[in-house]
Amino acid sequence: MTVTGAQFSPQATVKLIRPDFGEDVPVNYSVVDATKIIAVFDLTGAPVGLYDLQVTNPDGTSQTLPYRVLVQDPTPIDGDIGLGGPGQYRAQQGRIP
Image (cartoon, rainbow, N blue to C red; front, top):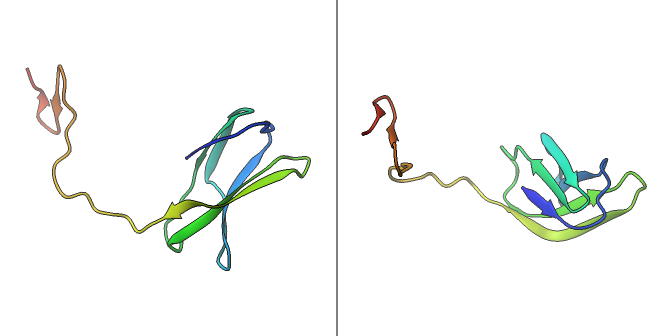
């Protein structure tokens, strides 16, 4: 997920908080600049519902946005997915002229 805001420190941290269930920290994240954080969460087995998003700077300042992230059960994709355009590819068949 991409978190946008202002005044993020290069050492800022981000986490998701589900009241009465706990916290989830990202498996990987990067503070791109003072306005953007990119975070990857593994929410396998996480309770479904709304989570608060919290960003904390090393000086202790933090901002919590309540109910910002909705975690849902995964929805299976029904159908075929393809990438089109010039020089299309098909799995296991190579290049399509």
